[in-house]
Each structure stands twice: as structure tokens, then as C-alpha cells.
Length: 506
Length: 107
Image (cartoon, rainbow over all chains, first blue to last red; front, side):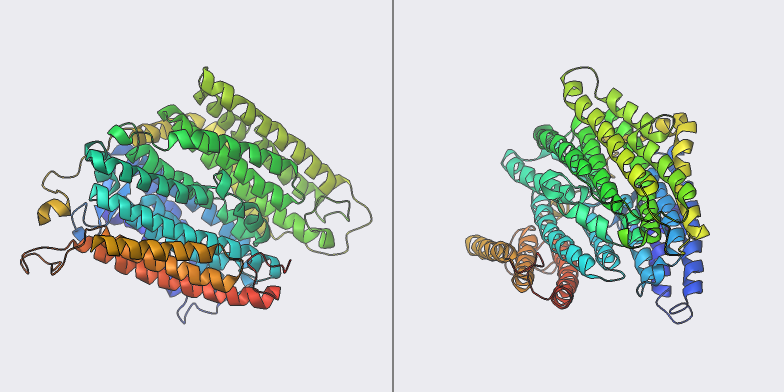
């Protein structure tokens, strides 16, 4: 049983998604809500168990159908994957609670789509094979396309057109990259690729480089790397609240894939292919961060502010990848967990503000007050503290770790100013947003919309993670450092009896 | 054979990219279809081109690599589903936005 546990984070949402479409559950909102709630609990439990396993053992490879690697489909549970699974389980749990307050009824099929979305995300974290990564990318993308326009509306449709077309082109690029990599490496298994990278024929090196960089373009599109990030603010700002909060983890899937492919495979042990992405990532990550800061300062609505903060955090995370040390990766992983959960919390708070302010929505203009100013203001204040990076919350610890990871040399001179200025810009924008939304009010509220207890619970769950990440900061950083070390070393070779298919065929 | 194959893939990719860069949703959908055709052929060729070779050991003198064939099959299914979705979305955008511009306005 326990050896099959690795597959549970993919299997559970898949089965749940299918059963939600069948008669006893289909069309019954309450039953669907309870089912997804229970599945989320199970996902949390399996993520915790997997994390425990990964901390005690070496990375475990699970071969689907017992087909041998590198031919079969491999799922790998190591520390990095387990941490990401736990993150997606916590986020999914909280976001689903929020959605149960009514957002899931704005259109059909919310719950099955939500399950398929989680299945794609978990699968992308677990897979040990690049082609399988593509398949899980497509699963999470097609679920996200449908979730994005859930509820309908002109702006949503328009944002979806851009998002879908861009990602379809991205998928085509992904396949081109995969084709080149298979033609040169003779394998698509990540662990196998890491071993073969240094042994490639010299005439294949240029091709393999092209393939690796094509994959960087694709992952950059997902992770919001500078010239490819223009779709993000509009998409995130216009979709429904719980979906935007869930999407907070989507850019992180891109970051995670860059770690898996460009840090682990095209990393230090790549021979001639070593660190091909780093020279590109340096300027682009810095530019992403700067562009994010400028866009942040120009935000007109709270949701747009949250979306631009996602870009800023993506820029900071890409910088840690560019630094390319285990310490930087560990700091990045801590910051990734923090920024995902806090950005999701901010999206949820923005959703409540949006509902309670009537016509003014979440725009930064003088208008009627919200119905629960103390409650929403308090939640907003905590989220703002965390996202700006003020002590005592996790944003502060995360930022400190990022700054420390930059070292003291020339790297620090490039990294410190934009990171610190991003904190300042966030401070300015949150002060502006908070004073306008909660203090610059006139008249009395015209609607009676109150936050549902489930919505408040969801936001509190997300916000609670921030102090918890500080209280258990020691244990968590130990974990992220172990995960980063595992990522930066050469993985265990596959069993020696197995060679590439092409060798067998000769 | 390799040359002709490469030229075919290249022309299809070029056509696909040209159409994707146009401003009308229908042209973009056509472009995406062309791109996915080109991608499928490209993936197929990544296992090297072999004539009269079975993908099963012991069936013929030369062997074709079976893995890219399996990959292409997956890619075709996924590409087909995605194209269908893109087409429906384009129709929905035409209905919601009142025109078939990718950017949603007529200017």
C-alpha cells in the first residue's frame, strides 16, 4: 500500500473528478462539495506521508505498470516534490473552502474541473520524465482554460483567448524541444538525462542546447519570465476569485520545471551543456523583477495589485535560479511557499472587498465602505505585512534568506537593490490600497453582502501559514536545504542493465 | 528522404507561425493546427527515419524506434483536444466580444 502512495496525489483527484461527473454526485452541489472536501483532506494526508517518506529515504522512483525506466513512466518522490505537493494540497484545501461559499455555483462543473486542475499540478510535481511533464502540463492547462472562463463574462473571455492561444503555442514549442532532446539524449527520463548530458557527442551538443533553451522558453511562459509575462496580470485579475487564488501556484509550476530541467539536468554536471540557462536567466529575471515593480506601482485595482505581486515574486524566484547555488535554491523554495500562499490569500481578500464595495468593486477610488471594515481590514493588514516582507511574518524571513543567498560580491550588488525596492514598492502600494479601500469612504454601504464563515476560514488558514512558517522556520529551512542539495547533486543512476532503446536496437 | 521531410516540417512550421501572428482568431486557430501537424511530424522524426522497419524486435531486419511513435500518438490526441477547445473559445469570443479580433477590438 505504502509503496503505491506516490501515485495517490494524481489518482485521488482523477477518480474524484470522474465520479463527480456521474449520477449520484452530478448535479448535487452539497454532495460534490463534501466529496471534494474529503478528497482534499486525503490529499493533505498523503502529501504529509510522502513528505515524511522523502525525509527518511533517498528519492523513490515509482514505475507505472512496472515498466522499467527509462522506457516506462516514472514518478519520483523526493524532498522537493513532496514539499510542493504539500503546498498544492494546502492551497487546494483553502481555495476550495472559499469556493464552497458560492463561487462554485457561478457556472457548471466547478468541482470536477478543480479536481482535474489539482491532478495536473500534482502530476507535474511528481513526474520523473519530461514527456510525462508535458502531459501533466496539458492536463493542468486544459483544466485551467475552463476554470479561467468559469462564470463567463466579456473580460474573462478576452483574457482566456490570450491565455489559451499563448499556451497552445507554448505546448507546440514544448514538443519541439522534447523532440530535439529525445533525438540527442535518446531518453526523456530526467535522472537518465542528467547522467547522459555530460557524455553527449560533440556534434549533438549544439542541438541539445537548442532543445534545452526551447524548454526554457516554455517554462518561462508558465513562470512569467519577462518578455513572456504580459498575459499574466490580465488573466489573474479578471478570473473568478478562487480560481485566481489557485492560479497562484501555476507560475510556480514553471519555476519548479526550470529547477527540474535546467538546474538538475543542464546543471553543474552537464559537461558542455552545463548551466546553459543561467546566462539568459540573469538579465531576464532582473528585468522581470523591475517590470513587475513598475507594474505594481501602476496597479489600479486590488486584484491587479495581487497579480503584479505574482510577477514580482516570479522575478525574485528566477533570480535565485540564476544564482544557481544550493543555498539560493533553498531560499527560493522557502520564498516560493510563502509567496504562493500569501498571494492566494490576497486574491481571496480582494474577492471579498470586491463583493462588498458594490459598484466601485476593488478599484482604488473613493466609494461606499465595505460592510465588515474591521474584519477585512485586519486580514488585509496581515496579508500586506507578509507580502511586503515585514517582521515577524514569513515574508521577512524569506527576503532575508534571498538577500543572504546573494552573497557579498557582485551578485549582491545586482540582486539587493531590486529586491529591496520591490519591498518598498509593495509598502507604498499596500498603504495606498489600504487607506483608499478602508478609510477614504463616503456614504453608507448599499448592499448587505457579508463574508461567509467558510470564506473567512479559508483566508485565515492561508494567513496562518505565515506565522507558522516562522515558528517552525528552523525545521522548514532544514527541509528546503536538504531538498536543494538533493536537486543540485547528480541523481542515482538507473539500474545498469538498462541502456537506451537506441542501443538495444543497434 | 531526410531533406524532403525536413523541408515539409519547416514549411508547415513557417506557415503555422505566420498564421498564429495574424490578428483574427480563425487564422490563429488554423495556425495552431498547422503548428501541431509540424510538431507531430517532427517528434516522429526524432527517433530517426527508417524505411520498412517494424517497431517490434524480431519482425524485420531494421528496427524503427517505437517510443517516438507512442509520443506522437499522445501528442496527436492532446493537440486535437486543444484545437477543439481553441475553436469553441474562438466562437465564444466572437459571440461575447462582437468581433473576431484576437485583441477583442476593431481598431
